[in-house]
Length: 109
Length: 109
DNA sequence: TTTATTGTTCTACAACTATCGAACTTTAAT
DNA sequence: ATTAAAGTTCGATAGTTGTAGAACAATAAA
Image (cartoon, rainbow over all chains, first blue to last red; front, side, top):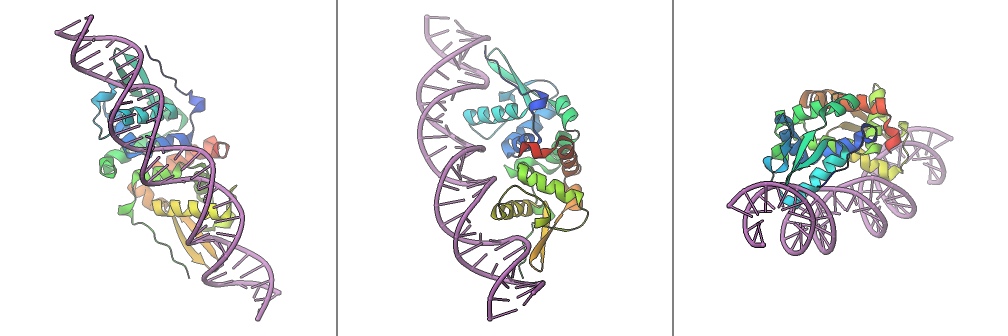
């Protein structure tokens, strides 16, 4: 069973978060994740890139501290670390997600 | 007299803004700029990098739509496009700047 | 036991990026 | 007319990154 390493709240950096969110594919993924209330398998979120590329992006998001990943069976379930991020960087992720929804990030991808 | 090209509000993208802010040197610059109320010459803001490197970063910030630059004499005066950004992406720049101040970005550089 | 599903890892590659020094431009000051 | 000041641009370089395919691992289903 695969386990993933996640940064503690202390280890999360603002520039790291911003960088992780600055890619259209990743931002789109995070945006979709925010819409789904509970954990979601990666495959449940549509994406234009190859499987391996998506795996790479999920790793970047995870290492930046934006998402949490755990495995269940063959699928890996991802969820946003919303509360932790809100506590560390109040308003940042929220406003970004709001802006992303309003301005349809998909067009930038 | 040198003039600079700035993107219109329509041309500013969320991922572009996030990417521009995701560099420690740039974020630090923007943070300093936010503290100074009016226009500031680049030289007024301390930076650990070479002149030419700073020039590069200012260009990135300008092309992302985050700052406005105009020349006066030999110096180029920069200012944040705060209102425009607030209107297009409400809360984004504000929360990032707040977080940057709280968590002392300098340490990430 | 096969076969299918889901995702990861490795390798490779093209594109981008942060950095600097040197040369240059423009304006201001002496 | 020199000299100084403030930035920009160019060239080079080392490192990072997004992308995909092939091979692999682990679990589930037939």
